[in-house]
Length: 319
Ligand code: SER
Image 1 (cartoon, protein in one colour):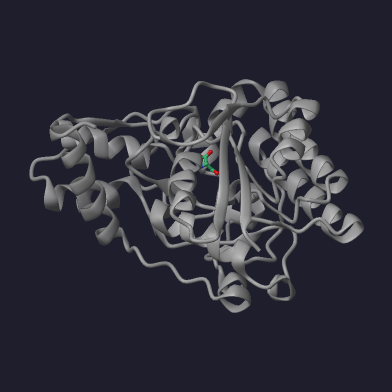
Image 2 (cartoon, rainbow, N blue to C red):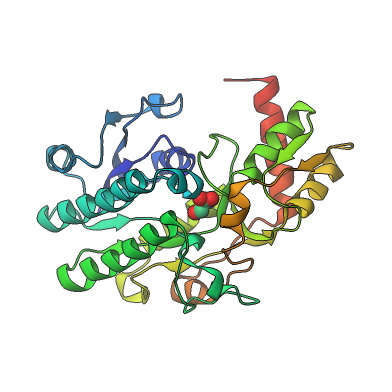
């Protein structure tokens, strides 16, 4: 069946890239990007509607009018921003998701939902050598609490109401089109912008803080492959562990310096260090590999080469 897709939070780092990828997807017949903010340059090149996902009537009206059958729900506060605005973050992250689930339950045109969870579902008690799919989910951040609760709601709506919602616990995502905003892993994007400008990067995490990470083309492909997998293959209805690589700021800085001689980083950890220290360093995604064939393509060095090349092109030839 042809896909008629609605994306919430499309202006964000992931939303912009999923929008670009789905515009080229052979089975996408209609794609409506939405956001509470004005559309960025990339979103302006396609169909866009303003949407506050906390407004259920507005969401339902768009779903109904455009006969949407797939929702990619990305609107959310990230981890660092959520720590500074706990109640607002809970409101958007939780009520936004519940609105999407309720609208899917009551509008039979909606066949599938994708909603990202995060490595932030894990807390200090899950910091094993490698964090398994089945590790305990006892987060110590507002963002993590909202993701754990969201995973449980996703599972509930799947089993109780037959809503087909699929989810991935993304690691930190690295990309060049749009900056992330308010996350703890954002350093791994900002660092490239400094390197390309020939500046010293001031890193807000300590040099040895190892976190799981993924390059955006892998992240987008994972979402599309998960959505395209047969329902009977999806054994996890909370959210799948997913990873591609793990590195520390010092390892990333060294990989960049190999290609940008003289590149330097100074370390000025702030409150985001406290968040990072509660998250896993290494993720085991064997269940995703087994269930729907997940396999990442980009290693640290491939990612660094591709990021630098694209950011250099964008800086010499801005669109
Ligand atoms: N990358 C996100 C953040 O740092 C985690 O999901 O908040």
